[in-house]
Every structure is written in structure tokens, then in C-alpha cells.
Length: 56
Image (tube, rainbow, N blue to C red; front, side, top):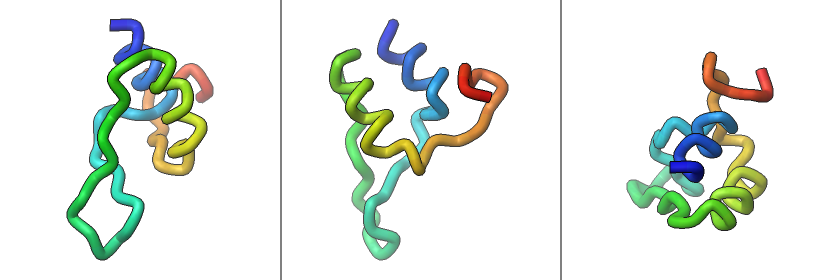
């Protein structure tokens, strides 16, 4: 549950993230909180602004 809260607070509302615009493959979401912290740094450009973001 912490992982989900962390991701949502950082703008990841479980939208599909695609590294290549010409591909239908999406990046898998992390399985652990530690992986989520790395994920937020690596894919920060894909974060969306929402009322749930702590950074807003």
C-alpha cells in the first residue's frame, strides 16, 4: 500500500508509460517501494500533475 501511495503522490496514477512513441509496449510498474523510488526518478518526465501530488 505504501508503494501505491508513493507513486500517486509523485504523479504516477498508473497511466501507461511508453519509452518509444511508435511502440505499444509499456513500462512495467515497480513491485516494491524501493523500486518505486527508482522508478519516480527514472520516469519523472511522465508524471502528471494532480491534486494528490505532494510536489504541487
